[in-house]
Length: 338
Ligand code: 6MZ
Image 1 (cartoon, rainbow, N blue to C red):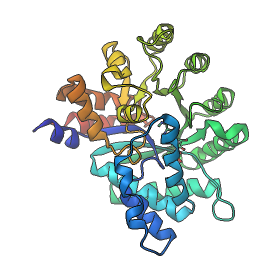
Image 2 (cartoon, rainbow, N blue to C red):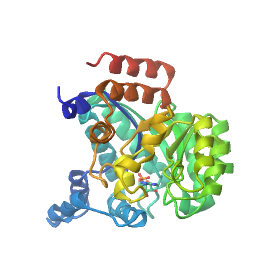
Image 3 (cartoon, rainbow, N blue to C red):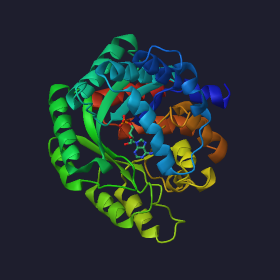
Image 4 (tube, rainbow, N blue to C red):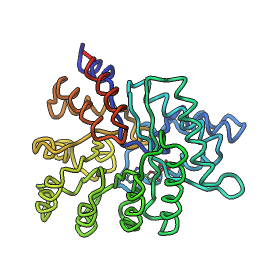
């Protein structure tokens, strides 16, 4: 089996996927047609595949396209079903999907937004029993304290009602703006919600130190916690000491230009140090990638072999927010693959 086929067939674990960033061109077109009855949708999204961003903030504009199309519970349902189907088709057996609850005046409340995602997870369960899906409720760092508090309260309510689906909180959003709301995150931790926080996607030593001290269950990116970045060695050492698993998204960092080249990517340094890591797609629609492609990059750029890729997949299960029983089942599926 060549490496490309191996990466595709390997049972994989995706722990870092934002719902609205994961919509494929097919899904965007489908949602566009649901919204308008003309045929202009066919070409509208065609050039997205070749998108190259000049910066992180330019990449963030891409989310507006998906957000403009997921403004009803029905659209959110369709979008979630499609994303689950596509991860399943890439042989992802465990998916932690994260999304920021969104209200649209007179059309959808944040509660209805989350209900639509839960409905899609439940509908997909019978269609694609091979993939287990969990939901993390996101806080957008630039939307302010009230919105963050509202999302945390919703996450608590939904976890109480759907403990099998809603397992955690994600802190995300444009890292050049807003706050990390660590005090609020403390309250959600107390009730058993697991926490993953985007960290150091751009240089921000004070916030990075605060987040590392807070000790989330996982960290996203840690791009600027890098031994070769001036002044970052102490942060890197603190990160290694913390042993907090880091979710790494290679294509995303390269396309957003927060990392200058694959060879310089923090993967190399964390992997060499034996730090827990997991590979994710971030926004597979926006970055035109899939988890198999991300593993192929590890193989071609960093010479990571098949056995090591399989080990990375099995270790990701341990860093997931699944139950012990679910982890045992997922590990067995990965171990039985050859
Ligand atoms: C930080 C990101 C992100 O929540 O509407 N998001 N936050 N860094 C990134 N790196 C590129 N990629 C996506 O999905 C889209 C939202 O996820 C967050 C942003 O808040 C974006 O608006 P949902 O499903």
